[in-house]
Each structure stands twice: as C-alpha cells, then as structure tokens.
Length: 398
Image (cartoon, rainbow, N blue to C red; front, side, top):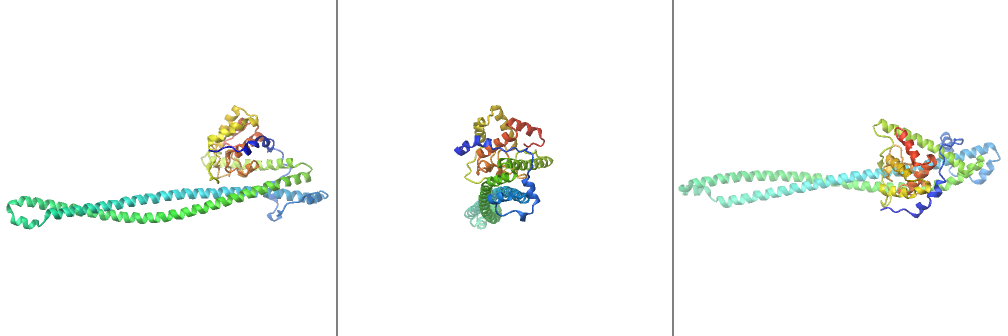
C-alpha cells in the first residue's frame, strides 16, 4: 500500500503560487524561435551572464542572444519531453513482451499437459492390451486339440473359441488405440519442445526490453534534471535582456507550451472520436519502473481529498475532481494515452511537465495530483470549473 511522502505533503501550498498562467499573450515565442532556426544554430552550451550583459550594449547582439536563449530553452524542453516519451515507449515494449511471454508460457504448459495426458493414455492402452493377451493365453491353451478329444464338450469349446476371437479383436483394437495415442503424444511432445524454445526466446527478449526501459528511464531523469538545472538561469537571463523578469518569461513560455498541448489534445480527441472512441477517455496502462508500490485509484482519491483544503476547495469541488479524473484516467497513475503521450492521473502532456513538482512523476500519484491541482487552480480556478469545460467539449478534454 502506498504512503504519502513528507516531501509531497510539504510542497503543495508553495507550488500553488507557482502555477503558470497559460493564456498570457505570447509576445515572446520560444517554440516559434526554435522552429524558425536550423538545428545547427542551437548552441551546444548556454549563455553566460557576461555574454548577456555585453549583449545589452548592442541591439542586434541583444536580439541574437535572446534568440540563442529561446532556442536553448526550447531544445531543453523538447529533449526532456522526447526522452520521457522514449522511456514510456520502451516501457510499453517491455509490457508487450511480458504479455507475449505469458501467452507463450501458457501455450507451452498446455502442450506439456496434453503430451503427458496422451503418453498416459498410450501407456494405459498398452497395459490393457498386454493384460488381455495374457488372459487369452491362460484361458485358451490348446483349444483345437480339446475340441477334437472332447466331442461332448463341443458347444463349450466353440463358445470359448468365439470368446477368444472377440478378445483377440479387442486386443487388436486396444493396441491400435495405443499406437495412435503414442503418435499423438510424440507429436505433442515435439510441439511442446518448440513452444518452450519460443518461450525461452521471449523470456530473454522481455529481459532485454526491461533493461532498455530502465536505461531509457534513467536517461529521461537525467535529461529532466538537466532541464531543471539550466532553465532558471536561462529565464533569468531572458528577463534581463527583455527588461522583464524570469517569472514573466517563464509564464509566456508556459502559455505557448500550453497552447501546443491544447492543440494536440484537441486533435487527438477528434481523431479518437472519428475512430469510434470517446476522446480523452480511458487511456491504456503504461509500464511503471520501480518496485510497483504505486497508489491504487482509491488511495489516490483519498490523498487528493486530504490536500483539497490547501487550495481552498471544499467537498463539492472534490466531487467534481473525482468525476473529471475518472473521465481522464480512471485515477490510474500509470494511465497512458499512446496517441498523444498524455500521462498519469491528470493526463499531463507532455508527461515531464509534472517534474516541476518532483522527478518521480512516472510512479508517484501524489506528485501527479499536486501538479494536476496546480494546473486546475492556475487555468480554471476550481475543479468544478474544469469539469464544466471538460463536459462542454465534445470530444472531452481540459
């Protein structure tokens, strides 16, 4: 059973104040700047404060430095998002490998059982045939000689001969059945051997994919940590160049990122609806790294209920939140929409947005819930407002 960490409990109130305002006018466009710049123009390092201060003295140099910072920020975010999606994809490949292995193991076990049953049937038939042959030999003796010497007992001997003839036919039938059963057993044994070989191959494949998934997850964590390390300084430098502030520049960038996420959600929901599925609902389950101690949906709801007061929300708002996230993810911390890449209980897109709370966002429902509540508070004000928007959109998304 999952237990909330002290860290998760301690960051709720502080993080509410840090929620970005996604609808601010996009006077600066990190996403657009990188899209317009060729990949070779993105610097391998990051601007220093000396470079930033020097660039202020010349308008052209200042704009160049602004573009460099915007490109660096966008590349950091894109790389982190890509690494996270790669980790999820490697995890899904491992998950599929475990399904294939389970099916192959079941098939091999079934063939083994059938082969054992056929072998037992052949053995039983052979035993029965031998027993009848022995009885036939003991009972028959030299029946023809007895018939000649004992004319008075001819009726009895003829009966015995008839019985022996029937026993002989029965023995032959049993022996034929035994041969057929043995042939079946041999064929099933050969099939079982092939199935076991396939099972062993799939077991190795599953192990390889698990290793790849774990490696991808470590790379994703490292990339997200790198993004976190550099973004604060880059936003501060950008604010200095633009005569604004790091907070405002981050809000602008977050707003642009949210617009892009909205576009993807809207298009993905429409595509799912066209394919006959309700948009935004019931995503699949992702493989989750770690020891498997992830919150159940019930535990996740209990945790969310316990921190509602930190946002100034009451029980009615909690009811709206429950309904909203039932529609989005079923309150499953490993819910993954493979079409869009949205992940977790609040269906963050991309998933690594939740790293702003903690780097355990793939496994920790508390991290996801805090991020989701911050997102709702910043964009919609309350869960009931978010649910109203979700219901008003067809297909649903928020």
